[in-house]
Length: 445
Ligand code: XIL
Image (cartoon, rainbow, N blue to C red):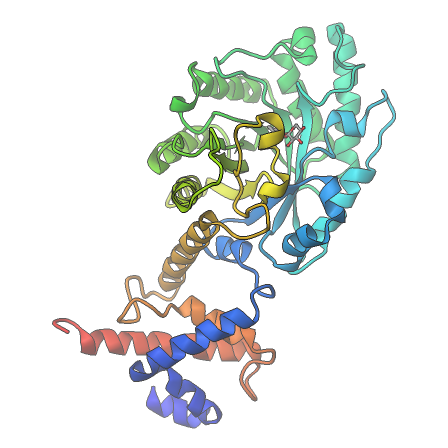
């Protein structure tokens, strides 16, 4: 290693000396300093979620926020989010308030936001085509089966075709079954029974064959969350829809949860696995964990309890991906990231503070729990890639990912090497050092 350094990388010898074991304290100070300089410029949650094996980490957003500078600077300026979901812009009332007249300006504004900003948020989760709420009054009436088919077909085709190629996924049907496991008496159900679901999925698949088609609902995370057999009824419904020729790729676990009442991580994994027997992928689609009731002022203990609960849910999405035959929990979406705009207090005024950022855009403990969990998973994955599972740096404080991030922070990388080569050099040297430290300092050190 020494030879290699002095012949090939002599120009960076002073830099490399930082990675000798006796220099670790200095290195840590430098890293800490560097990380305070550029807090916004480096992608965080989404970057590490991807390194940890997810396809994206995202948030939902509603149109009025697009005019708030502070909100937008977190949404777009930080690279925290690799995916967006419109909160209301694609709902029936917003897109076809008058029968046959389609308006997509609000949804376009969010789709365009997804393309801009640090890292360019590439993924758009589209939400939602058929839901029993958010309907215009002309849909909320009694129709014959034939008429309802025509209404559904026109709505779904228009949405799917207009956004074709832009939606990674579509929540085709949302919340068709209540907490007791009973089909909701929506105008669609009343006209067509369960067939409205199969019909919706078939129509969406024809109109946008490239999108992943999801069934999306709450209280699917664990049987403990609903008094009735909601999970088994939903599984049976999905099997029926598929047997009838409907295409369903995924199931969205909304995960609107309450602090202290979040199912254990292993329990959520277990439920996700049941769904992965029926569909190809699952996702956490509307995550927020509210205090219920909300005590004011909130305390550090409350936020720590919330952080643990966020860890259970996001951890389940990571865990289920370990050796589960390529079928995956693909990503996590927050139902907005700041308490300032959370939907919870407007629905239930005695509950709230459900998000990962507080009212003033300050990151809560939940943020750090989730980020650190991604980093830990990512470090494990990168060690496995390097064939070094189990190797650490000897004192458990310097991870190759931190160093990788540090190398990327330099605008040009090291002189004469460029970014990519700098990163490779730094990582290779660190891993070699880690191996050496381990073999000399252990056992018995
Ligand atoms: C909510 C929005 O957040 C609110 O602004 C709106 O008034 C009602 O709908 N499940 C869903 C979401 O699938 O679409 C809902 O969003 C929250 C529950």
